[in-house]
Image 1: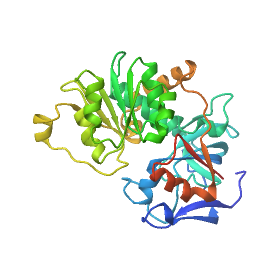
Image 2 (image 1 turned 60 degrees about the horizontal axis):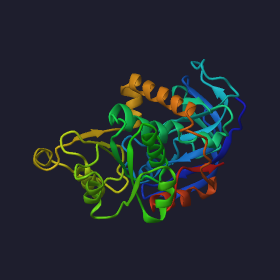
Image 3 (image 1 turned 180 degrees about the vertical axis):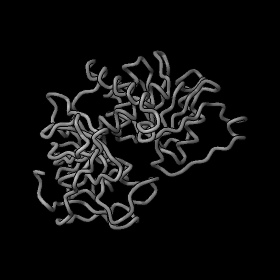
Image 4 (image 1 turned 90 degrees about the horizontal axis):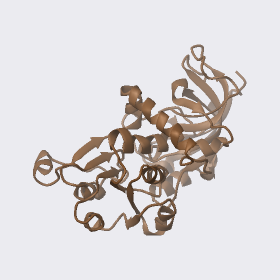
Length: 332
């Protein structure tokens, strides 16, 4: 294995939040298990799931102390005995819960990595395996988006939101993006037809005004909290779909009474990790759609907002505070 024995890494020491993320210099470099590859990390992706893990609210997440992070791009320096499809020296991007990617080296499941597209820098490929797959899965196999549909996208300026706006427009939808006011120009530049304030208490009513009173055909709901009720109210009665894939603003509840008498909509729960494991054929369709989007120039290389590894706590705090735009990365 062409790697040192120890490395720099960010260790989460409690479940009190990202402020208890600490830089250590003597973390052991992992040995790849039979079905894993060890990569020298060029850039680690920062996701809201990292914030949830830091508070212990990410189901199945690691327990402290642990090396944080679960998305990375880099160079394969070693591989497990059972790995044959990924070569040492290959530049890859991949994901793995508990993989500890906020570090100089990380072991990832070989089945959950893909080559960095030709001509792309490693850090430009961050988001392909999380943000873009989430956006495409929510829109296509789960949301059944069609040309002429109206799609409401929450957190439209975030990594997944930006991917969803561009993809929905490519599929011929009218896009309503919801974001904080200082991010509206970013969402418009992506091609959104309308942009609304995500904190507006009249959000659902404004969506109905923009749709001649009928509501959105599809809502991509990642915010949770008060936004969940707005999503249900904004969806078209009977045929409207609400795909729920996040809870950034907290939990929200819905009762069977509300589904019968108040919100007659289709509610779809979605987790990309579960989709990969439980419906690999559907995930294969998503990956084929991704390559089609690349060929069409919809999915293009984009440099993330970069932070030094030691600034990881600040990156997560700013993500949690909703002050960031687009994809974020930590550079070891």
